[in-house]
Length: 425
Image 1 (spheres, rainbow, N blue to C red):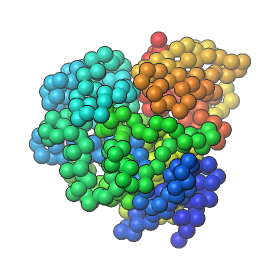
Image 2: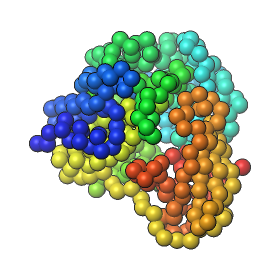
Image 3: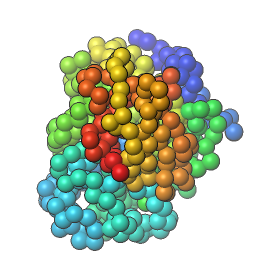
Image 4: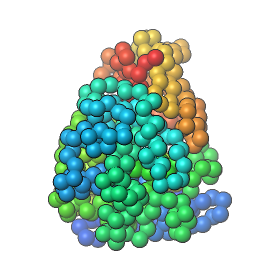
């Protein structure tokens, strides 16, 4: 059996990750391995029970509560959200299922801080009246944080308490979790990580996303608690529908081939896994579950370089216990480019400008609106390189030469990147 603490140390140093905790649960046995420091300013060392932000892994917790409510007969997954939540100023055709599967068409990257009060989700939902509808509900996939705030607000209305309180009552307390919180005043009672930028490892100045984004991404937890939550989805049939494919995911990054009810479904060498990733302010988290091998792996990091650590480490863990490795990312290929996709693309919080430079395309990403409040790098330039199929519409890019390639796909009216549809303006 490998020394996972030693391997985490070696790979984290190579990936220039500041701090991390690796959690492995395999057929009843748990391994926890900490690495590095939680904060370069204080030098506090990472411990096995340290808390890291889960980012969008929080969505699977919110989805689990929605599935509980469905099992209780208090909502239907195909109910229009406005039937259950009349205050929601969204297309009347948008259903609960579409919110769970990012197919509502709502332009979802709205990061407005609506305050620390218990009414923050209600106030956030009111702002959706001014948000664009990117496509007809149910006709496409585009990652939608706002949809999960809507679901969180629905939980509040049906449970007559805040989303945070429902999370505690429905999941945290029944599972006996002692290191899972949502608010900063709770996190400071533990050893909590702060984010560090990928560029130079410096500590970021903003610790957490606004409370209004809670159901989409503000759970802070330990690796042991994440493993315990994931085990629920191996053992309790109530949550089995979350693992059933709902929407195909064409980009296929990291083996992600289908979306269930929020869970991402992966094909790793013919084996079916499910899980989710999360990204907040320079804290990246990863969760993968293999039901056949009875294997769960989570990796919590406080560095923008977390992906550079996750992919090789996940390959080693899953090769050891399940005989499969993390899929290879798409690679660039030689092909001429033209100007058909040059121009501006824009959605909430992001503007993308595509231009031609000599024999290749360049995409400049600009954070806009409320996202500027916590963007570590408000402007970043990406080189776009052709990839298979060589039709002039498919490209790959990466954050830096050390990071994995990511797909970028164009149509005449939009670009699909980072799991999101961005319309051409």
